[in-house]
Length: 264
View 1 (tube, rainbow, N blue to C red):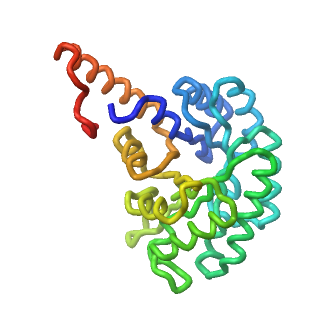
View 2 (cartoon, one colour; view 1 turned 45 degrees about the horizontal axis):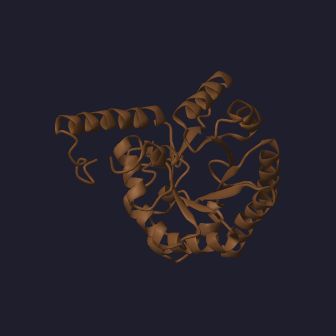
View 3 (cartoon, rainbow, N blue to C red; view 1 turned 180 degrees about the vertical axis):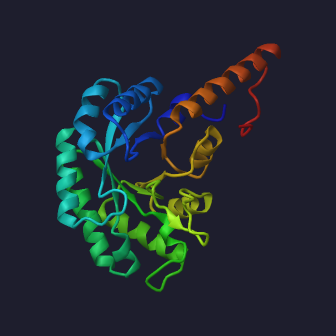
């Protein structure tokens, strides 16, 4: 296999964010995250305290979303929401930028907004992932093309202290010509662009649209270190299946070399 189980599992932020999530589903999701030894659960703020109790001692972190999914809260509300989440046990914060302010070209506002959350989180020992919602940025804004706009956001977030820049919330639904709503989420183009637009000290997270093991591996290949996912069990069960097939093949060949690099 190209990567170890642990390398891939520790990329996953197991997402428990659906609006209808019940307490039982939250608890089951935390147990699943512990079973597969992922990096973290990504949950709504009210659930942080319970998740921290469930995951204590498992090695799985608790992450909370802030001003999710549209980023429209006042800066002080975002800061206070971050404070409460960290008090309850969040080790990571996934915040959404003020998208409308960014599209308006009010870069100072956006940077102050991100910095307020980063400063609060860092002061409490937590790290911050900043969500752009790239599905809303396909036409660019503020007199910038789409790629230029995303590069500007990456640079702004690094200055503000972000630990990750993140493609999407997974809920950035865009109205289509036929009246339906859908989203793409993370794309290969955006992941490569964002990785190239920040220094090595800032990581990149993919979210939305990564639903299988090959997608997770592609995120890693493109330089992403984290991936929001709901299909955690399917991804990692598939890893174990492929691993078993590979081992069986090596045994048949009398202990020969591993299947060619990049085969998966």
